[in-house]
Image (tube, rainbow, N blue to C red; front, side, top):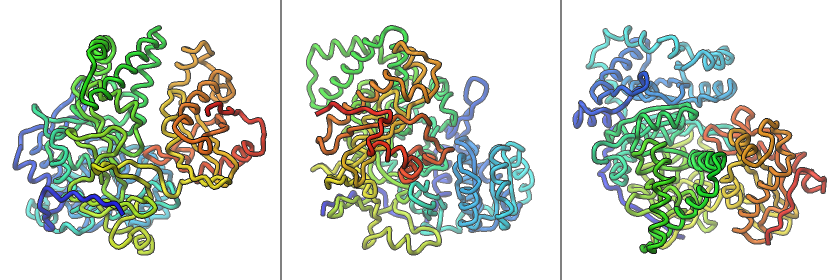
Length: 609
């Protein structure tokens, strides 16, 4: 059994809770900007001291409204400044936040609120209120409902002026490290969402140790800053938000990804937090834009050079000719891409799915190190992450300080340490099943290299066994195909079937540009595009590339381009846009049957191998 341990860099403090991170930050740098809020075309800074003042004022409002220590408060809100303000105010009032994804259905809202025992809820918009209101009759315990769009936070603050500072100080010190810090419900990609009890220590110890491990990222000369756009209801962005408060990183927010590039240009962050899909979009948009301007060939040559250059840097020697070619493309292509992203980004932390080495090397040559990491809700986000000074493209890095990882005999990744959750809320059976002798069983499969860098090879539950007995990990095929600009989602199928096949959906944002660039009618519908020969030929090319990485028995022999989208609203994607495989297999069972019964579905017969 392979095991890697990294000792904690910061001594544990079992008495500390998450509020201490903010108090320590204000003591260290009271006048330094901790947040920036959009104002007109620019941004207005909020200092550490001002943020603390607002947190205490809102905490007083919650206390005046009758919130008691230990009470659960639901929060449904997009990524914005108020999210973290409410988070810390809840902690200062001694209460516990239960995040709800802003895209959750009324049914999901009802489950999270009733299972957690929440007695209050904060909602951002009228539309979110309408979803909650639909199930409110089934939630008799939820007596307090506040809405951001109605100015309820200001009203709470105004009503809390009589609560004393001493009362807030008393309440914020009630929780110890081992006490519940938050209750986060898993995205439910397999069955009903389970409530993960993350403790104050999970946030405190992981923040303190991660800040040491990622010092170059969070403590840059002239001040580090980041623009958050991933949903803060997800543990990944939530943890980073807390880490930024601890480290004094200036945080801006932009929940609308269509406004991301203008926001990056004006905010100019030094590092980003993203999922691979964001980097794929940046790359694919740049490529299609170049194609539309008749410069597609130049862009592709530049991309090839970038990847070649990064690989040469990794080996420690760059030939002179490659240096010259790279310098030319850096001036012509890469400098413009860097400028479009604000011009100051040196690092990006990426998680939730594999990035692919092509993109990793491409962005590395742009001067942006994408530090891939790995973790789950149950590990308070990161368990491993690449470091600025030691990183290997294609891996999710070494184990974080304070964390241990071992691989079981079947390759399952198991985690122990400061980041591992306490239990599943009111679910002792699920908790018992999730641990093996104190180690959390992730359900993911991986391998370590000799230096302790982890590579994720698949999910235990997703391994497909063909009728011929071949074990196939879908991720190895899906990830390279999804990198194609035309592709939105890929679902590899073939369990107990004679060969491997795939369902593919098209990226509706990229489709019109791609069609126009390829001499097709850019107005065609999704249904028409799914049957279009040029589109199918392009998907076939993507499939052939993926097939080139696997054996004949594992390769995709047929695929179907679906005429619909898979979305969160359709129930096929989780909030972090991972596929709900079991739901898709069920909903498209007839399409899958068609592939294997020899029906001439929209299909490609792979010519690879």
